[in-house]
Length: 234
Ligand SMILES: [Zn+2]
Image (tube, rainbow, N blue to C red; front, side):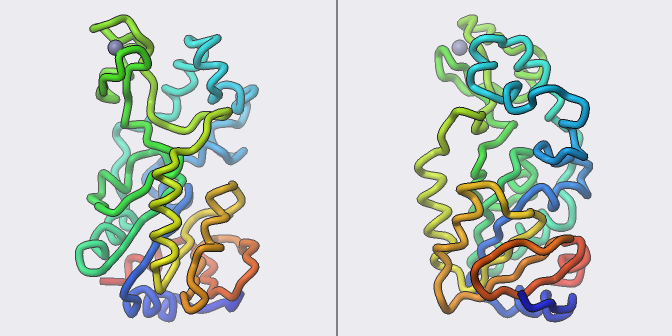
């Protein structure tokens, strides 16, 4: 990876015609939302997070599942500069955001072309009757008052597969971009990190992250917090 400065990173974004952002937890830390996968985040001191966020736990120990999932909600969190600038770019050029985050902040910022690769905590439904339920209602009770069914968030739990449509849209968005920007992620979770293989040979790749990531193709690398780049663009 070729390390570049903030000005060059901003120029690459400004000059691209078709941009696809691949985002991770790092874009939400400034909104006070922790990385639910990182050890320094919520998982610290919590036993068996993979189990607590699994399909089995939801079915077999629904109370345990519900009490853990509630800790992932930050209803007062607001989109930060990074979410807002990505949404703004979407209004002036062909822009897609593919996010690993389940915090709903890209949607809250107004991003139209968005794929929540692992789902969205704020998109909830009843497992029994299928009706959509607001996250506000879910946070009061996981029991659907209409039918007594269990309410769940539409996120991809451990043991569950990704939505076919999310994968297809993401592949298409990466393949069509002339600039793919990987932001705020160590890019290690499969199959999210495999999306980069669909980038065109002519596409430029820009990585904005606090640590280097493994990529098997050429990329520009801006080693810093993403907010500093986004505050300079537009
Ligand atoms: Zn129901």
